[in-house]
Length: 386
Image (cartoon, rainbow, N blue to C red):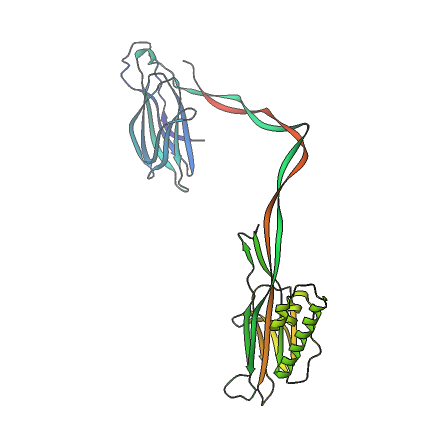
């Protein structure tokens, strides 16, 4: 609700003939607009009138907005950040109501304004027009429109479908580490008795996208072998011979090629791909302390460790990331030559799209538009008696 400090609402009804060229005061108001609020005034005007409005700010810097609206929604004047308005004029083309809106957005301070509204009649015949507005309560009817789906039988349709088909699968063994490392004794004054060998598993690849690749390459497992001294090297060669023999007798799943077995990775590749170990009991010789680590930059997590002449293992639960093998020689006098091998198994799958037609019996659906009336009471301004 607005509070009017002082108002002089002047209506003129003359029974004598006056000049239609003199402006008639409709309202002269001093209005307080509270913080973060607005005030609205409504007055009627006759066809042919010239609406004249003036605004003067008495307290405060400016109003956020001053607007004159041809009711209900035709904005005729809109001024932002205004402090004064001198005799702004509007032509009235049709008898109706005009809304005068004063908006204050300041959160703490009110605005005090003087608002002067006049009308210049088009002729003496409309001089005595009554600009007063009264409020009526009416029932406003709107309609809620929605669609309802109705079923009316079924029909048989041939629908084209798409599915992804695996074209081929390639299994490969990738060498990540193959090194003969010299691990010095504990009393060596120039070099530490600990060596750290690092490696990284191949990154999984999805082309063109991970969601629906035409080709994907993933690491499915990997294996390592550690052997100290000449005895372990000979022991590894015997394991390779056993792997080749198993391949010849058809005891493996056929994942290892004869060329791979004969190349020096047969036993380790067989372990990595199929999880089959052909390694026998470790030989006698110098032991090496080892640890398999996950991580990088000195931030490592220990996965396994041991102290033996030889060691081997297979992992299929961690297939991405960076790793290291730490070797430590506890011999006070003699250094040790240590063989370290690491291989990874990658599986590459190629896919293509295959299209086919499927016959389906589908329900026939029809849409029915339903208009549901919504009634609500509203207060509207109407012109007074004229």
